[in-house]
Image (cartoon, rainbow, N blue to C red; front, side, top):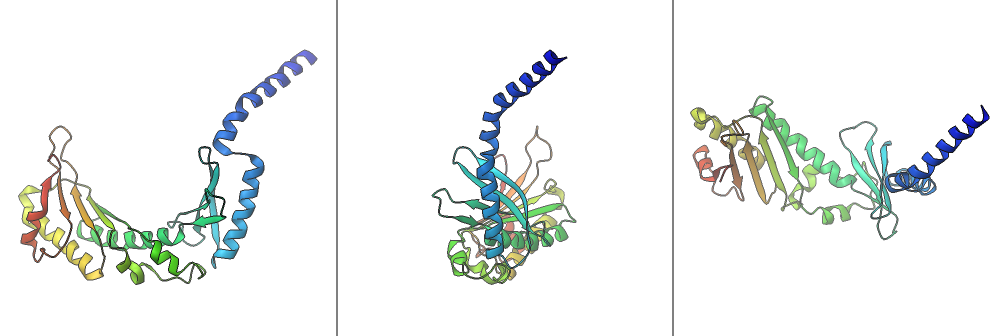
Length: 236
């Protein structure tokens, strides 16, 4: 009986020794992880004027740093990152960028889904947000302006619109009209951008038939008839 217990104990010890390196690579030091969590809680209390929930804590073995994903208690869709800086200058977060990006995506995607009967998705990859972020670093989050107030500063943004079906050639005029309506919406809402990438799914993988439309400017888009000038096949 005692011999069996010793064997079992030895097995646990061997497993611990073998697994410890794996744990440290993926999870980091338990002590440092605890310190980061405490630092994280203090940072959140100081920086945010709303309740923030920590989703999970990650560790980068390559950089030796910890970071966490979090979201406001009343907005689970707004997931952002809080991380320890690589040069040990304290914590930083990308809440502002994530907040503006979430707001922009939601606004545009809502309209795209309306036009395409829920078959479309949209997102805006914001350009350099540093100048806008620096203006509000001393203001408690929750009191900073929304995307509508700062979008003019993101002129190098890229707008991605994906339609979850193939381009209907037999209804080409209708398709151009729908694309034009979205272009008009982007113009009316004052979204600034470097490029707009608009794509339809391929009809089948063996015969590439997808379509895409790429706009670097909307200066030459004055009617639905102009849309065809920006059309290209995904097989090009």
